[in-house]
Picture 1 (tube, rainbow, N blue to C red):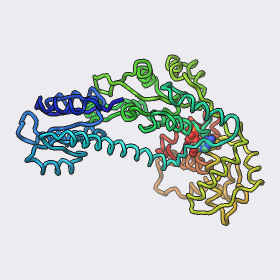
Picture 2: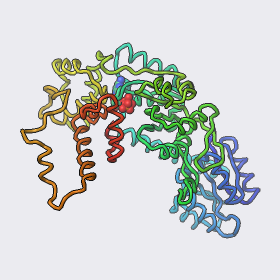
Picture 3: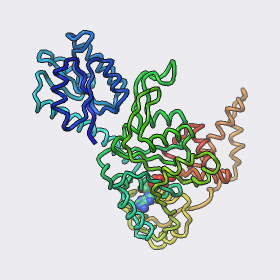
Picture 4: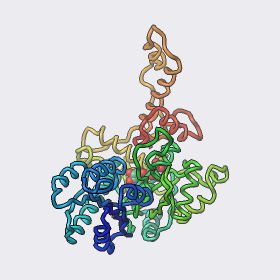
Length: 472
Ligand SMILES: Nc1ncnc2c1ncn2[C@@H]1O[C@H](COP(=O)(O)OP(=O)(O)OP(=O)(O)O)[C@@H](O)[C@H]1O
């Protein structure tokens, strides 16, 4: 897939020269004035803009181009700009770079200089995008090796190898913490898309409007009168050539489901508030811990979308169902967590491994990671001697009734009951998460929420702005 370059220059000969120079390696779009440039940016995913500074309505005044450069940096910050400067305009080149231009080249054109400047600028831009992605991966401690010698893990790795090269949509199913995102990431890494972005989105953690605008982007002025003042590229555009991972796809609102279906059926979408139809070249991987069939039966998930995302299905077993992999997983996690804490730890003893193997792991490998991390942090020597309580809530300390304590702290001047109750609820939710390895489903059960424990916890975390990234 060729990258798209937009050349903004009012001089027909210059545009023709640039087109001839670039057309073998890039898809080249042209605009003779700012209006045409705006239109081209709305109608296409542009990877880089080549901008002449002297443009109508004042073709002798480089300030027109400088103003447009500033506008582009604020409206389309994800699109790098290379400026063209006349031979007496070198000082503008410096100013343009201060304003955020990626690079510049001069007139008359030197073919080698033009090509190498553009190649370099695009490479630098994609490198920056990759680095951001890497930082995110590091921040979430993603480690993309799928460990485990069990039959199910071997079969999973083989299936990933088999389908990675195809463009087919993949549905990854499994309990929370079982490794769905890990599988999606691996699928991307071993695919021909590996050099392009991998973007993961948690569909359940976002409001409908946010999700829609993040997925498809928006145009300036979208969302009515006080709407956005800049254009924003959505994930479908940012992930171009790469993989988009929609985590918890069952949580997609119906309006977004309809738009997603259009992308899958026709490869098309539009930015919010935009007219232009854009083409998508993204591999979609979806995940769910819920039973999508019952969502379809209940009418909350479109059946046509269900069939579209159901092309290749990967079922990730719960940890308790491949418990033979626990020693290998636990050893690898121990090494990683010890390094993270700057400690040297001995391998886990047989007794500890047996204790771990007896537990049911409702939070799967993520829970195992949390339990081992806690043990490493709390270990006084170089050995994890035993794992503290693996189930049930911890007792409330001492004989003191915590509610009584709380009442004693209320001010004499009176309180606002609604606010106080909300505050109490927020603290309870935080306490529940703290005591349950930050696993929402488990914290919800600890709070006695029953069947819909995870959904209720998700709602409460959302309500009180408790960070969903930290609390899966
Ligand atoms: N087979 C495995 N080998 C190594 N690490 C694993 C394996 N399975 C899961 N993990 C690790 O467990 C953690 C949780 O996995 P991941 O985030 O992929 O789960 P998930 O199913 O996407 O969870 P959620 O449903 O909560 O989004 C990650 O750190 C992942 O690297």
